[in-house]
Amino acid sequence: METALSIALGLGLAAACGFRIFVPLLVMSAAARSGHLTLTESFEWIGSTPALIAFGSATALEIGAYYVPWLDNVLDALTTPAAVVAGMVATGSQVADLDPWLSWSLAIIGGGGAAGSVQGLTVLTRQVSSFATGGLGNPLVSTAEAGASLVVAVLAILAPLVAVTLLLLGVYFGLRKVISYRARGDGAAATAP
Image (cartoon, rainbow, N blue to C red):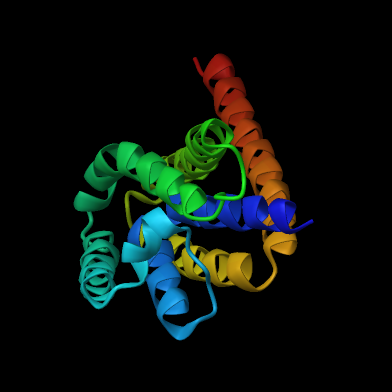
């Protein structure tokens, strides 16, 4: 059961990296420093004071940059690969009790996949917002993403199985919404003169 919890914890933190890259890493660093999160030996640097300062600074810059009207869409393109890497790091920091090959496979496929999936949905959401509101709704999207990243990261540490379940439901309903929006858009385009 402990292995399942550590995998769920890693995947929950990875998914939070899909919303914002540095918020979950900051939460992990603070939780490790306060004794609420145990990191695998090779990832103990995440709980160091320099890492905490670096993650705090990077979090402030990342969140602030997403409120600049045109920069938010540019950041989406740049942060997608970084979110995948952060998801791999977050998952890798939690799955040490397994064979190294399996640990890294879980980190790369599971963690990278979770972060990439959530990041992909946030990119689509921002594109829809940019199109529908001319970018005026993007600050609301940015606020929701930053808040979701914080909530998911904290929830992953406190209740990993709940976090993963909620994320799976969120991805499911998010995909349904995107598919529904695209279907309406295609239908409207087909009936236009």
